[in-house]
Length: 280
Image 1 (cartoon, rainbow, N blue to C red):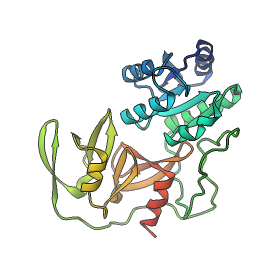
Image 2: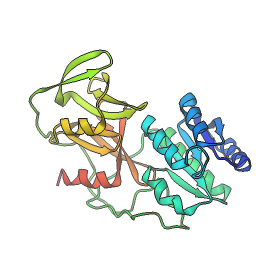
Image 3: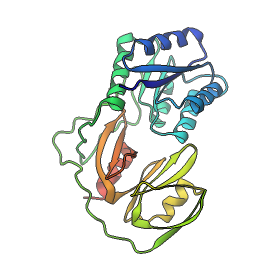
Image 4: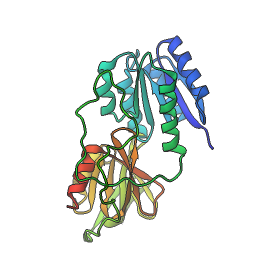
């Protein structure tokens, strides 16, 4: 198994030592850097591109929440785990789609369970696609003092699976896009996904062709026809005709698998509910 690159950040040297020992004990993880403040964390992230970041909320330079937003703009698939003594930031942490929130002092077993769940998500191979419930009961914010059941999907009973998405019909016309190499004309239904990556907007085609474009996500969301395209997340717009399955990822987020592509998208609980309404 390829080790999971992990970065830790805390302004307290003693807590960094605890984090370091946790990563060293966890099976399948490789510690690639330590940061003592938010600015250093972002610099190390850009240099190392870890898959997992374990960070505090209150840090000098940049707060952990601001760091999380900056990291998501680079790669929204990065797994974020907050480890902090401040329970009051829990709701803010989950607004940036944190995988987990560990309240200091926490038990080693609790942290090891989080690492196990992350390892299953990142290295566990194919997982079963989640069923699409008619409704998802999502609390407004986690209850302070209670640890979320990370990575689980609410038990809503047997429901129909996502299955193949019906063909919503072709949209005539083409789109002119400006990108780093010049200008291209593309068939709109051949656009598979739009995503944020490395602080840029990327247009991904069904055949795997990628265009880095100057447009923002909101601008492309306006240009693309609603009959085919759906904003699943602040960092993703997907072609409904290419959705193959939806799989659990973290506490309040799912992965959208697309036909014929190795890249996938994220979808939040709220947008997941909206997606269901499109097929009712």
